[in-house]
Amino acid sequence: MVRPEIRWIDSADTCDQSGGLVDISEWKPLLLSDVYICVFLTIGEPGVRGAALFQLVVATPEGIQKCRPDTALDEMLQSFKECYPGTPLPESMKTFDVGSSWGPLLIVDGWNWEDVHSQLEHRVAACERETWDESLECLRKKFWWEYEGMIRKV
Image 1 (cartoon, rainbow, N blue to C red):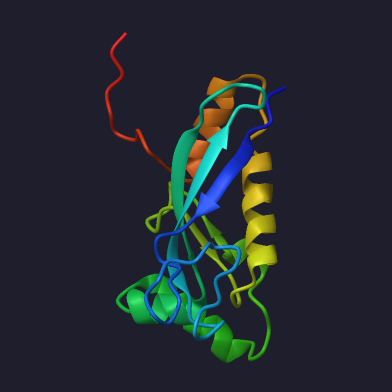
Image 2: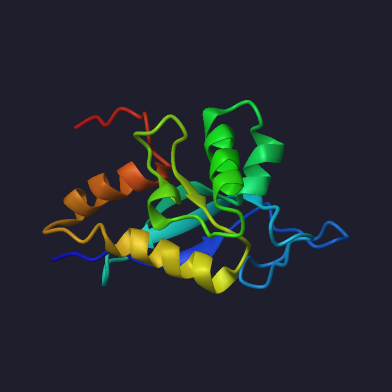
């Protein structure tokens, strides 16, 4: 069995108040409830040199409302918040894969690096398969892949 491993996680959207880039594990947004960032992951096969680059968006409901206010997702999140005030989003509402109209998205209730990291590790571990190619195919359903759409010539 091949269990893909995360080798590196970062974001170009994690800046401090002066505009300097901060490591994602150290980053603190101005408001923990207002996040909408693109996250890059380097994922590889254990014991094999090299890796593939993947991306997804990590966002809070408030971040989605500010960055994508024209979407049905915004309406769904707002409806949930109105019906269940103060209740965290259920797990089933937190993940959108590539097959959805939203693409790879991880919705978090508020920014907490340890929780985000844990959820990313879980998403990658769920792609354990018999071969690396099978694992890669699974990862491509959960993240944007660096080579997506390119034609492979043999």
